[in-house]
Length: 338
Ligand code: UD1
Image (cartoon, rainbow, N blue to C red; front, side, top):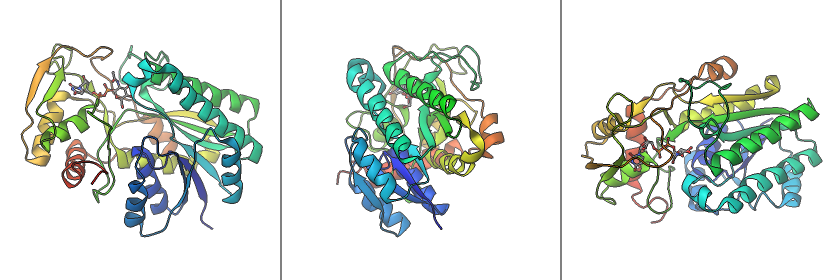
């Protein structure tokens, strides 16, 4: 019998790619989304890719009673919890909204899980819980000192999960800390669709390539890196999605674990531009600007724990990440808006 997995935020960028991989691996995603930061067209696209009708419940996760009903009605075996706000700059401007959505929402989910006796959860966390790395590559036991509200909401929820486990050892919890997810599904039907002008590097580059933006601003070129520009650990969103499925499969053996998800390799902004130009055949104009506040020289993961515990390793190269980002952007220049 196929297992039903409750996916909160299943219409979002990482959530939607994970739903496809759940289906590929024989699970049934039960999608919950309030569509506050995602588009309903994602659902049609998921149905098109998977060739099947999906179960989607439009609700806010702060509606605990609704969650209880959904968990019971669909006899969910586990939860993958994505639903949260994720814009770093915005989190600094609107801390109350961020704490409310990310923490009250998460607590409501845990209350619903407790009430229904469902004790298995995979949580979408972020490398931002580490703050500025004191040592690279970043291992899971690195000190946790987030420097922005977004990262703090992730760390607080990680701690809530850990305390939940300490209080009742029957819980099975997997905390996944993402580095920099980029790329899109091979079909080019789902991908990242940021609101307004993108803050992150890859969506910005691809919007320059498609002619929506004039040129890339490179935030600083005096960092202590190979060419002076910032170095990050980019990971293909499909690799990331597969790691969630592996976490679901391994949950019974995990107790309460936190796991980094990256490739373990760092690439500079200039290296990313070069890879994108090669993959797309387009020229990316750029200009050097002052450093962006809060940015660091380099960030990349130690991924040995993911390999050992989940038997997972990222497979896609930087070239494929750029190619799939480009194909998505070219085929959907305005994202999900037609
Ligand atoms: C950012 C967030 C981080 C979040 C992550 C994934 C900041 C300070 N950090 O990380 O909390 O978890 O996104 O969503 O915002 N760059 C440019 N020009 C641009 C955009 C980026 O030069 O227009 C550079 C940056 O300076 C950096 C690199 O590209 O060196 C990657 O930036 P970005 O994609 O925003 O990711 P992070 O800074 O790693």
